[in-house]
Image (cartoon, rainbow, N blue to C red; front, side, top):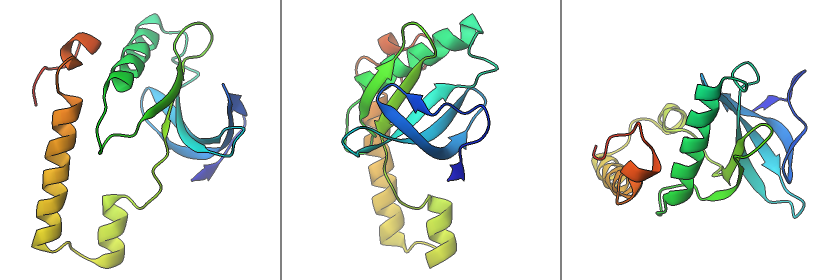
Length: 144
């Protein structure tokens, strides 16, 4: 996690932002903490694209799609703001190493672990691309 920088918001909705977890072409993801001390991954549009109507609409579609997805392998949406101001979406923060970090630290996974990981990924993809996905987003395929 990187520290907050100049221009980063200090708060989004009920979340006080603690640091930057990552960034993509469309958004930034912060680690946030609510008033009860619960952590969340809070994604917000990058400031330079926040006023682009197409990008804002795409972000809102993503937020609505994420709210429609449930399953054991999917981080639950805790809160979202898609109307007015700068849109954001907060999901469960699942602490742990990335797959790259785990392999670097512990070495290659044994075959049973790879099979279990593959099975979990298939279940999660099924949950994500299950019924209602094609209606939740207009630019997504209806199957994998």
